[in-house]
Image (cartoon, rainbow, N blue to C red; front, side):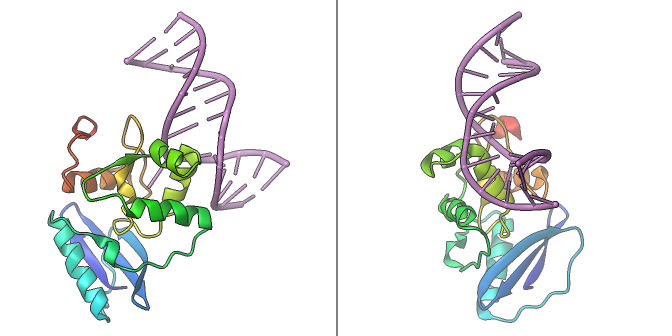
Length: 154
DNA sequence: GACGACTTGTTAT
DNA sequence: ATAACAAGTCGTC
């Protein structure tokens, strides 16, 4: 665990690392004991703090360790390439990966590493879609990134 | 447009 | 084997 970040909208963000790789990110109501050990963990903490201040951060430089099925991994790998402030629909991803929108949603639900793997940048065709930690967090993340064309849905 | 039924691929039990 | 799902599309009214 590297950090329980306190975010303005009353959530803590806990990041778990192992061998310099991110293995899990979770949102929690209460902070967990903070343990920062490696240099990359320190950097990641600073990047997250900047991110939540509304600064554009690219998390692609951090290694992640995914213990998920090959299909889920392929979806998550694609999602990692979506740039800051942009959104893609489940259907578009399904078309590119030759699968169904529903399967994409399932894969995203299994994402162990939100924010760093920006699953909040995937929305449904007419609406916001879901988010495992609560859609309101997804909404806040998109607002934070200044994703404007969804303003009617926010 | 709003609503429902049919489709769809993957995971969980 | 089958139910459940973070979706989409096509039909009816």
